[in-house]
Length: 334
Image 1 (cartoon, rainbow, N blue to C red):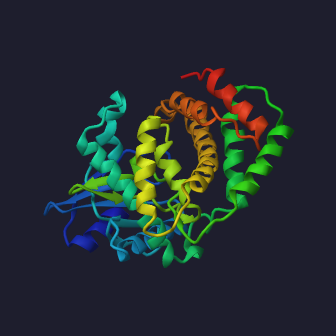
Image 2: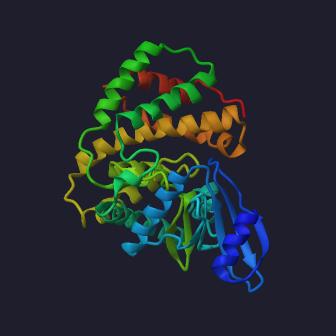
């Protein structure tokens, strides 16, 4: 705490009068809002890994170089473990959408926010990626076999085994091996945000600002779209997703000529991987650690699995059947 106060004083020239711990989600990183005697505020971050902090700072620099909204960095500690960034306020997109998420009815203002975020996403992916030094990314520089296997095993060991459902581990691994090979086809030189969701977007002066992108790396553009539109915390309807997918495709054409059918084939495959990664988080943070934020996502996640597997994945028959069992037969202990 004293280190943060000194960092604030060095930046602002005044003493910190208030240090408020901000709500945490799944990360071990801690954020504080610091206010000085002159009323100036900043958000301080204390990370657990200097390489992760360095990735955030570098990716944020690329955002700002391209005219994309990311918090300005005011000061960084000598050891790289803490930094001060611009205070973007409390208008987190997820919180702003909460009333609409509960009813499924979105007003024009909410739709404008969503369209703005989705239409900006291709710019983030292509323009940030264009000049990015991938070696600075954390914990890995790209979407590769190691990352995919980490995510698949996260699902298996931190979700599936907590459910108590019986499964054939050999048959599941056979499908995982096929899925991993399929996922790595045709990855371009584009930036993958990794955790692109409404909780990592702030609205300031009517425009989206992007935060918590420290896990970004080179990867497929479909991953971020799946992260946003299939997130169990927001559980958008199929009709809403379709509308925003078309908005994304319109914006994507500024950077790449795309076949809609080919895009959707790839998008569905990547959505499967992203959902499995999310289920791992819900299992570890929810079923194991009993964090309510993640427990609340279990039933919406089951609905996502049910919808995604209405059309079976022919190349992963055992996995498809297992996911349908999770969607329709398993009852989470909330």
